[in-house]
Length: 164
Ligand code: MG
Image 1: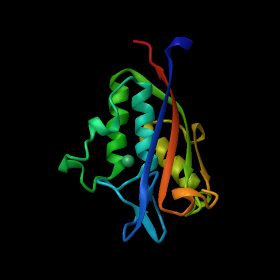
Image 2 (image 1 turned 30 degrees about the vertical axis):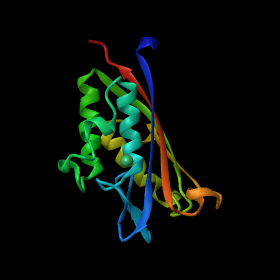
Image 3 (image 1 turned 120 degrees about the vertical axis):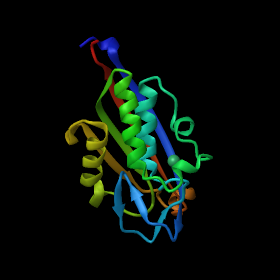
C-alpha cells in the first residue's frame, strides 16, 4: 500500500445529558438515569465516528448530510446514519483501517460497555473489533462534563484509499 493513500480523520461531538431520555452510546443501550438530548438518538460517539470517517474521506460533515432541520432524521437511530456514512466512504474508494475513541463523561462508567461499543463500531464501519478502541474518561468533577451536564466524544479514524 502506498502511504500517500492513508488518510486520518477527526470527529468530535457533545450532547446534553438529560433526564427522561434513554442513553444510547456507540449504538449500545446503556442503563443510566439520563440520556443524550438530540434531534436523533443523540449518540455522540457514533456522531463523532461518522465525522471522523467522512473527514478522512474528504466528504461533507454529519450536519450537512443529516441536517437536524430535516424531519427525516428526527429520532433517527444513529446506527442508520453510520451505515449511510460508511457506504459513502466506500463509494469514494476508502476502507476504514482503524478507529480510536475517547468518551468524556462523569457518568456513567464506560468500561463495562467498551467491548459492546467496539463490536458495534466494528460492524458498522466494516473492520475487525481489534482495530477499534473506546476509552472512557471522567470529568474530574469540573466543568459541565464533571457536573454530568454533557457527554463528549472524540474519534480518530485511519482510512486507506483502495487501489482502483
Ligand atoms: Mg451529535
